[in-house]
Image (cartoon, rainbow, N blue to C red; front, side):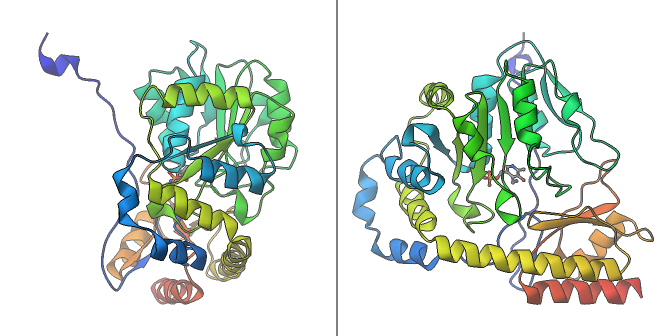
Length: 349
Ligand code: PMP
């Protein structure tokens, strides 16, 4: 057997491109257009490089405590990782170890399928309903469940009792709700984790807290779930969270006022952009996230994507059925959105 036959071969997840032009409008990877809280900047100023000599606290206690206080749970209910991608990857490894299929929606965050393949977890994609809502009845008889709420890239938020109905119908497996976009219009399922010991809720600092570059994500769940997750994490890498991520993350969590203000601005922009895109003839689900997944009946997605790109405006285009007629447009500042809308107006005549 050659060495190459012994390689674990995977088809990796392809993240959105990260172009670095000075004069560009980057609205392709759902980052936040506003800077992190001024409290993060202040913390950065007082950080001492001497502190980097030592390993950080492997429990990231300051950060888990700040999150526990914010979400009114105990520290033992919080797990932190290097972005929610790291957290979810470890969740896959920890909880989906049976030979029954893991379920996730057929249109969703495409990383789920990559992890399932990487860890050799059997999986089944659950078809969305015609209106692109998730079908709670279809999440049955499985080895585990994961879905984003709101879903991505559709932007659709499910009804308030959806999560609880899926959890109560599946007491024998772990149900994971990926709430990467929940702060832009939904109500978190975190309070339900006190009632159901098989429910895990995952969130990130990358979107609503403007800190994609710091790589901070977390999960909230029963102490039993969290301790299983920690056992796997400590079997791979004890020190996932850098000292900088821990300290700056704490500063971000403490500034609730700034968080609410910037999220409010993004939501206001989104609602205005919905109106303007509608006037230009675009159709889209009613997004409750910081992006809009829109298509134009008259022009293909790839054509629009390429046109905007030629104007240094980067949006996300997924060149696969049934998404390829759509553009996923992240909400930037009002000024950036106006420039994008002006370009579209000219192009569509
Ligand atoms: N879940 C969903 C649904 C996402 O869209 C993203 C962003 N690509 C993530 C998780 C991961 O975000 P991060 O690793 O930056 O926390």
